[in-house]
Image (cartoon, rainbow, N blue to C red; front, side, top):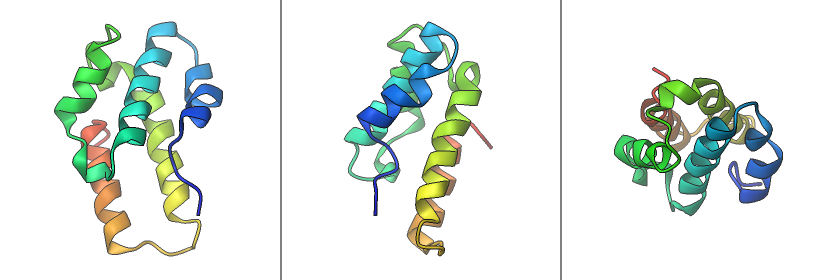
Length: 101
């Protein structure tokens, strides 16, 4: 099974979206997710810090980009056409830390 987040996908996907700071913030959030062993290990504060590191105040400013990241993970979860309880928990956590709920 492929990984949902990767540095190369970030360069080709999310970071090609319009707006340099938004791109940098989305790439910083994706890098944070890549570096984490588990999505549950990433907090909303970690995501906010990644955004602030590139002078983006909050995930609300990169909502579209966050939806792309969430959608990518959702696609990853359904590669095997089943959603495990762990994947469901990860999706709920990702939705919360990306301020999509």
